[in-house]
Image (cartoon, rainbow, N blue to C red; front, side, top):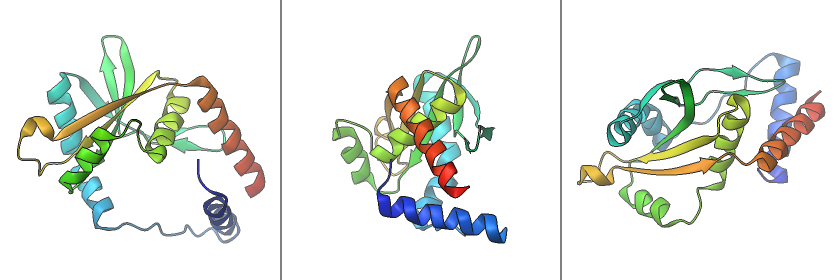
Length: 166
């Protein structure tokens, strides 16, 4: 869930934000911007490939934290899962993610937090690259199933972090 140095930096930034009421500016490089700009395309590709309907994510406030899933996957009786859209402009990233036995750790924990907040049982990580010449290769999806032990670890870590900020 993050190294001690990263945690200490984030803790310092959050304390500074509480004291000064100023929000730290987050960094956005060209790859991050590409992901933001192409998220809707990735979600539409997911709907096309899987024949699923989605609805846009929204802020979900929890006790001292929250999240904004990219999309909710809809079933006949409402939300059945989540979609986390990851967009890349680098075709070799598609092969790297396809060949990895597990999702990237940060993506796993993001999905875990979103499942904790929504109570939903799974989150699909959809990696999308519009530059793949074969359309059937443009989307790679890996499902993360809810793991109650990890959900509890996440909630405990967030509670501990928030106590340190307070």
